[in-house]
Image 1 (cartoon, one colour):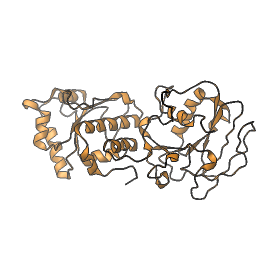
Image 2 (cartoon, rainbow, N blue to C red):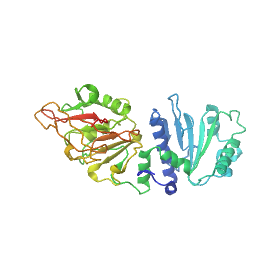
Image 3 (cartoon, rainbow, N blue to C red):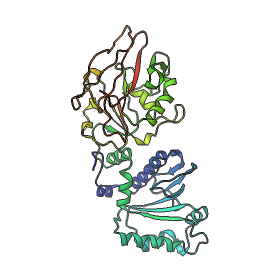
Image 4 (cartoon, helix red, strand yellow):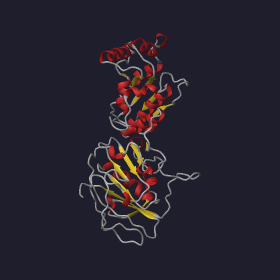
Length: 372
């Protein structure tokens, strides 16, 4: 079990409304992870509002769409905190003895219908009995063979949750078991009280990307290539710059769907600030399971030691401000300002530079390679 995970039985403490929200958030994360839009998932989170048998609806337009946990692009989830034996399933799907109109429409649309029961933790025979009851409930519909039916017990729900650590953090928070210093997507930048969190695109801050031959870009120009760099790289990426230049806010903008197009998947990112002494420490993470951002308020020279490696900082262009040239720093893959990709168990080490002159500052992004 990773440091973010909760044990399966901890989910039993969720309320009905929280369970529905959990399924909805998992569906959003699943849809976004397959390149579709989170807006194609709908759920109210209100347990008292009439739902017609639909707690979470997924209607993905992207084709092809192949997900292990969302059976078809058109899928509805029915959320049940209590146990759902075969008799309960029949009553749920056939109120007053007739097939629910919502489920009948799913048959006509060749969609899917999934019951999620939190209290149930089924053996294989128990699971088969429940699915057989679901199949029997639609037996008299002319399109009975077109619908996909499934039953998710607590094991299946927990398995799905483990695929999305950012949703796991949300569950921890609602259950009163948060991890100190760890966050899913949100307002990461330290905005003073009464100030807005808008990204300021005015001139004064430039960005240097390793993919652009060290050309200075404006923040607006750098958003799209930076997103592409993260989406296509399997290495750690360091964001360096002077204190207060806006590193955290710039990175936050990469996941903001209101800024330009093709935002990074906000459901797949986990954030921590090493300057806030997160517990557990990110140094304990050995196999990243999601896109993880580590940040700090301190300068580059205070980066923590990791396995004793000492990457080089390049002989960057001269300026009238601060410069790190031909200077050895001790840092590592969990050092401040690093992105960690899921497939990168050993990201290695890299180099870059930080300059400032007449500008307010420069953000430097460097891919960390396996070269010391």
